[in-house]
Length: 220
Image 1 (cartoon, rainbow, N blue to C red):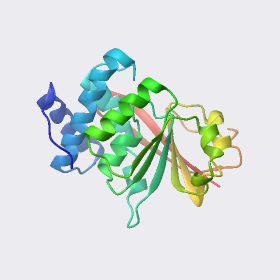
Image 2 (tube, one colour):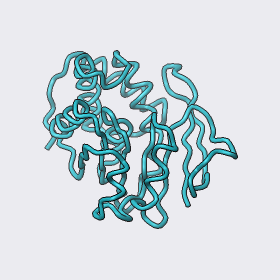
Image 3 (spheres, rainbow, N blue to C red):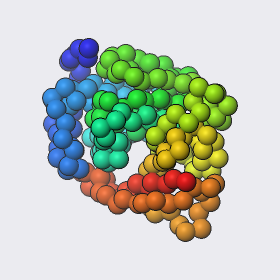
């Protein structure tokens, strides 16, 4: 069970998280706010020694990373648990905020960088996140692993080139599985999607004036 600890700047972070959730229309309970608070503060602390992200303040992390991640909540909510894989997750974005917001989600975090993997193991344990697996691999290796064939409802791609991921995810997706891409602008009609097609694109604004973003949902 998640044990509430007292992080530095806890009240500041909680207030920013509540403002963020309100801005993007995301309903979270007290425990979820506390888990996100712990995640943000640990990310900021570890970032000083491990360079998990270029963002250094709680407000920057919440507005640019947590809010951006939570924009996909409606795609994951279902009567049946969703199985998702976050490719090149780094410090756990977007997978961990989504796991906190939709606890029934079965999450696999893929990250080859060992310093980032150490942080992921630490935070998954600290927050007591169930059904969360960490793979210290590249997506090319995951494609060859039979245990992941046809397993995932969603592949999450953020801050990676599509041509570095899409060629390797067809086999690990379920028949009707989809890829969610976090982007700064819409995909162009001529964009190479390696056998996938654009199903929908959702436009939204980040809180605190951090700008405009796009969720591109693609499938077979």
